[in-house]
Structures are given as structure tokens and as C-alpha cells.
Length: 314
Image (cartoon, rainbow, N blue to C red; front, side):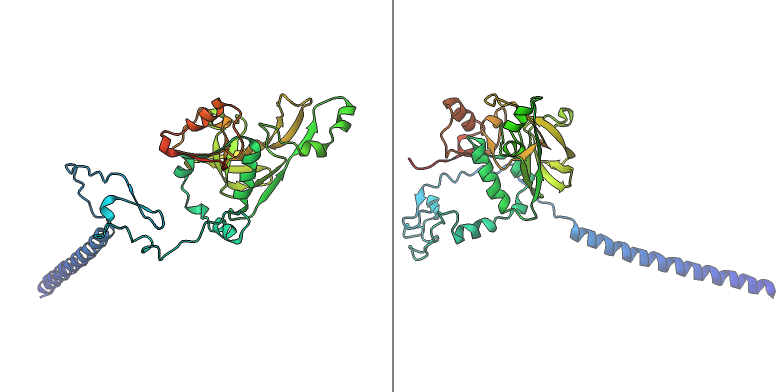
């Protein structure tokens, strides 16, 4: 009798274990199917790209609206052989672009420039060229003024390189502060987070930190500036170093303790030698020094269509 009870107890336990394992298996199967369905929804659909389709050439945009000057392809004309979608036969008129830089419309236009949408690839492939450093510094200050964020100012320490006490009286520190020779950073270096800078010295050539290298500022500290490469792959720390002026037309030399960088929203034509960009813009408000300098500026792009020139009307 006891043996029969034991056998029955074992059989019932096996049946319960089998039912329990089947229930667990069904639940796991349902969970797996739900997970697979969710993954399929998140997974991008495959697009079949055909390589046997012939390339279609739309031609040039040779047609022009007689009212607003918008250009079209020839096939875009309506049955009346007119391109009226742009301004509705001149009924819609666009306001003139603000020509004075201090007008309210011009200031509002510059304030709406979104610097955050500019990608590093676009910055790496573009350059704004000027003839001299004075015009570059003027553009630096205007662009920095309209960039978002707080401005940080780094002041340098200038000392005359001479053992003669008379030279120290002849060239006081205030006079040295007002100078910005070629190859030296300014006395007051104004920076913001995200601005583009350019090295003025070879700090670490093995790591790519050479004279003329462009970087993007990521952190501003009291004695260290953290910057990343234009493509964002590496991060560097830039310290203050002593810099000695080497301008040949100065009768004296002085030392400036400052970060060996400058803002690089623009570059001088001489600084651009040996580099190639996808798009360049030449600001020729002042005449170039020679035909060779103009040739260097125009030949820094890969094609003639990628070159823009800004010059005053003659």
C-alpha cells in the first residue's frame, strides 16, 4: 500500500514538472517573438540600389525669372512658358538685404546664425582668406561677438629683450602690449567655447601639432586650453609658452608669454600656402602685395567653381 502511494506521488510530481516546463517554454517563446518583432521594427529596412539605371543629366539652369531673377531648368516652365512659382508674377517681393552692418536688420541676421549646425567636416574643407592680419583680426572680432557663450580673455606678459636699462625705459610694457607682430598672438586673446583656433608654433609635430594646424576649443582654463582636432579624433592641451618676435622691420626684440594660438575664422593668403580646401572665399578689400600672392589664393581650391571673391566696387 505504501509502495503504491509512493509510485503515485512520483508520477504526479513528474506530470507537474512536465506541465511546468511546458508552460515556461511557451512563455519564453512568446517573449522571444515579441523581442524579435521589436528588433525588426527598430532595424532599418534594406533598400535595393540598382546599378543598371542610366544617369540622367538635367542640364544647366538657363532660364531666369523676369521679376525676381530666380533661375530654373527649362522643363520647370508651365504651359504659358513662364516660371511663376517663385514670386507669382512679381506679386511677392523680397526685402533688400541690409547693406549697412550696424542696421537693426543686419544685427538680427547675424544673431540668428546657428554655429552649432556647422559640422567639423565643413570647417575642415572651407577657408576665408584675407590679404593682411589687420583684416583677419577685424573679422575675428565680429564673428566672436555673435558666437554663443561667455567670452574669456587671456592677457599676455611682455618684456623687452635687452640688458640696457635705457631700452626698458624707451619701450615700456604698455607700448609692447599694443604691438601684434606677424607670428605672435595678440596681447589680449579673446576666446569662446567652440571657436576655431590656429597654432603659431610647432608644439608636437609627431602628434600633428604644427604651425598652421587648426583646432576647435573644448575647454578654457586659467593656464591651459583644451582643444580637439577639426575631425574630432584627438584632444590636446595647449599651455602658455614664451614667444619671441622675429619681425625683421623692428629695431628691438621682445618676449611675450602667451598661448601660441590665434583665432582661425580667417587665414592670410601667405599662411595658406601648401594647403588645399573644397571651398574658399577671398576677401580683397585691400590690394594684394603681388600677382604671386593672388595666384596662391586662387589656386587653393580644387575647382574654379569653389572660389568666391569679395572685393569693393571699382
